[in-house]
Amino acid sequence: LTRLNAQQSTNIPAGWAYVLPTESQWEYACRAGTTTMYSWGNDINATLANYEQSGLSQTRDVGYYAANPWGFFDMHGNVWEWTADWYQAAYPIGNSVVDPIGPASGSKRVPRGGSWNNAGTSLRSANRGSSIQSTRSNFIGFRVGFKQQ
Image (cartoon, rainbow, N blue to C red; front, side, top):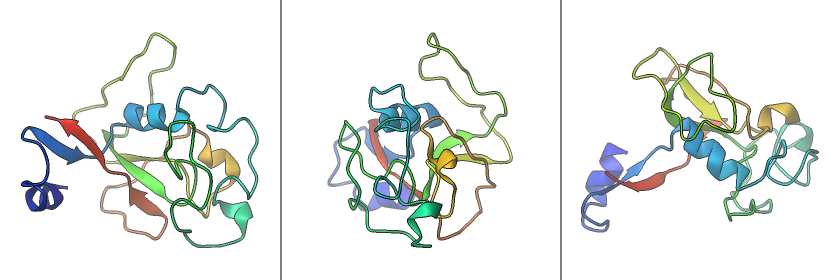
């Protein structure tokens, strides 16, 4: 993202930058105001997301499946998406928790969303992964956010 911000510095407003979303920002965008297991409800099948049961065994172009209620495509499946947060085993739970901040350091980062090679339960809005940040694979990607610094 450092390189993207430098490359686009003349095209973005002063004081703004491209960022990875935090884990809680990612889940908020994924849920899109819903409280179900997935942004479309509590069931999953191959017409809703790219995952193990889709039988593709690879990524699919973004936008093939319907967007969530806020217009975000492929929040569930296709590829895991890196977040800015370091992994911690205990994740805040409850309605009173708003935009929790992850630990300042760690040994693993948090990817969210599941991928084409995961079972449907791995694609739930609340599901979390953990992986060393040097991991490179055809089932891990990222979603860029934009925020005022």
